[in-house]
Length: 115
Image: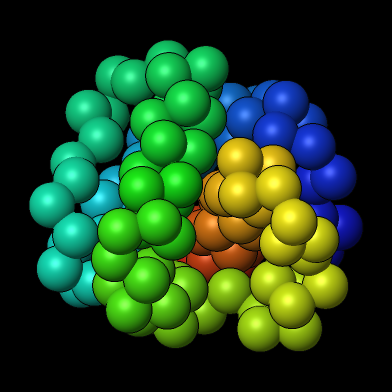
């Protein structure tokens, strides 16, 4: 499996495979497991998803770092990839982490659908 390199490619691939709704459901499931009160509507637009996820990750990093780390653990975002990000700009960091979260969730959905 070749993982998408941009948010747009990820959404395009999810829509082509008719798995966008499953991606949203997987996000909701993992956020619930992490005790983070967030429930994406299944009909959420990709642009809204991106902005909302970015905002939540940004707030978690700033205000609830333990919950942020727990979320990354539950979603199973590779620690190596997170450590490789530049942490100087918190806004950019939260955007990059949001994409890592979406990529990992997409990977789960894709594998579950194909195997």
